[in-house]
Image 1 (cartoon, helix red, strand yellow):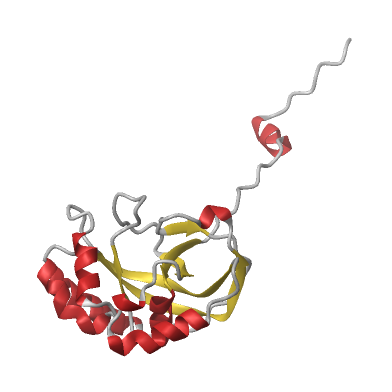
Image 2 (cartoon, rainbow, N blue to C red; image 1 turned 90 degrees about the horizontal axis):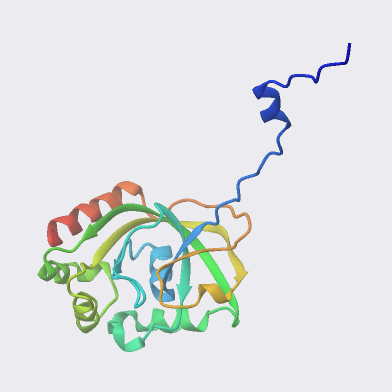
Length: 207
């Protein structure tokens, strides 16, 4: 009697099938002025003023935790108040060599607050370095889209990470998936409770 073909159970078929490994997701980074990144690192800022890039239809939170991507291209000394200009100069002079991105920290979102009352933003001058003209410019850009005030908890890396600037990072976009190796995080710059208190103040001013 001829041998009958062996029957393979569904469980055996699954076990025998080649296993497809998931592609690791790259960490998300948010582009922000180098000066602002420095102020976040020093604890002098914990709220980001965001409207979205020219190629975007507004600003939205793509990641609850993200790396900071310091930028220099759109920074302008005249857009910050005089008391911040020495720090502006220091941020510019400490820029890494061309083609290198220096990642200093990650940030965790505490609150994302869309501005419903523009006048309330003027009550928050102590939370940012911008001139009144720069604040107005951000409010007036795409007036149907709200300015978003992003309260964040900043966590420095144990050591800043230098990575190559890739061509796909270019352009006026807020968020980029960042190719970066393993990094070790330090301790938050400010207690989360303090950032939550600031977020509550912001919400009361602009909602």
